[in-house]
Image (tube, rainbow, N blue to C red):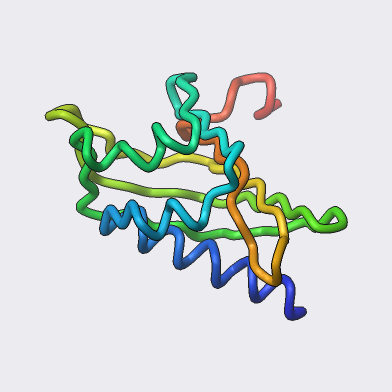
Length: 130
């Protein structure tokens, strides 16, 4: 694994730990100003809304990423992974398993998260199993 891949992997693991513990201050510095998060139900959150989720009632019991694969495009990286989480938002269950895509940009010798998208994992469509 090369140095950039290790840096991205370290950033993604740290980001997952921060999400689990609800560290809004870390997120404030780890997201680009034009960050967009697209949730598994199609909602979109900007940076301010993403960071504000914890004050709004989000809490995780667990938040884990694995199967990380990263591709680089100049000073950008696209990482795909498996995300598994347990938690609640305003009394509603937010647990589940997802395929997640993270878009990262490199600047000032560090990586920042510019985008996040999650899709729930479901059974494969019948046309794929033929």
